[in-house]
Length: 166
Image 1 (cartoon, helix red, strand yellow):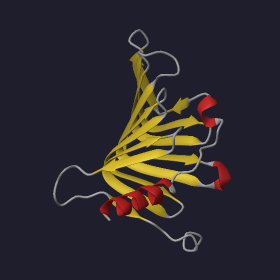
Image 2 (cartoon, one colour):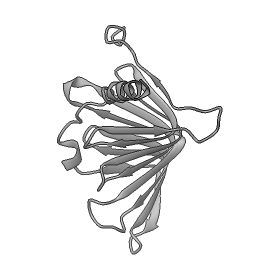
Image 3 (cartoon, rainbow, N blue to C red):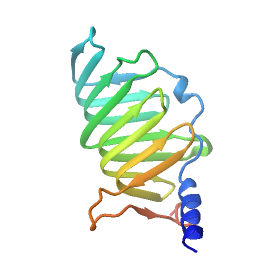
Image 4 (cartoon, rainbow, N blue to C red):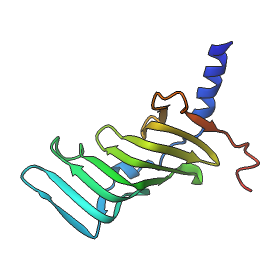
């Protein structure tokens, strides 16, 4: 019986995620901020204040961003932090996914978002909260976990289809 409940929960959680706009990952990544500094030799750049990262419809907004490009072009890692940092992306069928966390790590090569610290991911009125949320942009797979404290748990809220438009 427990396996059936877990399977049902996983299937419902998967409905949070629909296919991203197919061209987003093919577009260039633009970063804007009030200040930036770093080492071209070490392939590490830091952007501070009013930071915006955009790749097609993917948007990350943060107070600070570190870009690590040591693995080469197309394999950069973007680590955005804020109080909180925000992520959003338009998906096919006109749906939008949004997220927020104290830290958002975007691994371009792996097409992976890792939300850490008061993480929350929402789509179509449904929402998942936890200490850490991992979201694979290509496979549309989601995994969430609590921080191990007895008082904290992963929370998922499902909104019935008729309610999400209200």
